[in-house]
Image (cartoon, rainbow, N blue to C red; front, side, top):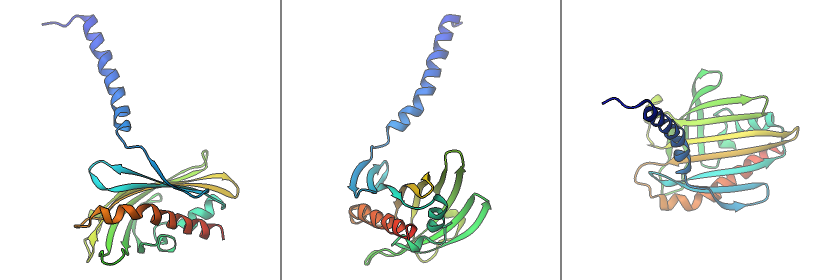
Length: 208
């Protein structure tokens, strides 16, 4: 049976609307952020992640430091132990391009939880017009053999933006599945305080 031209045109239009609408639907399925702590220049938010018992955390902060200095303090993958309390060690395993690198990190978790490790693929984007440096973090476990640790999986994103010559804004988002048989009930209550302490430490280091 031949479909009339007018009906076919309508079907195409409806299909186009559906294709345009689907990405919006996907975005709205993400849970909203809940403000957990507000300390003036640092705010901490959390939200659940579909399919994971572990909360995702977001920090926003104002830091009195030039963007280049803040980026240097945060490090390129080998300095996280200076400002992240649970970061026992980290090293760059390799660089695919000037903006891509693979990072291996060991997490020092409080007793009686055993330490974890993770492998991360980091991609940096520098926007000189917007005056931002953005870093996307994706899991890359297959890039490095398993060691004597439980392998954790992490995804994240952070952006630093120059608001002035001596003022930067940080947005820091992280979700980590610590793996093993670890209960999220032991970790989720600590996510807010531990993230705040890390960002506060970074703030103090950058403002020295």
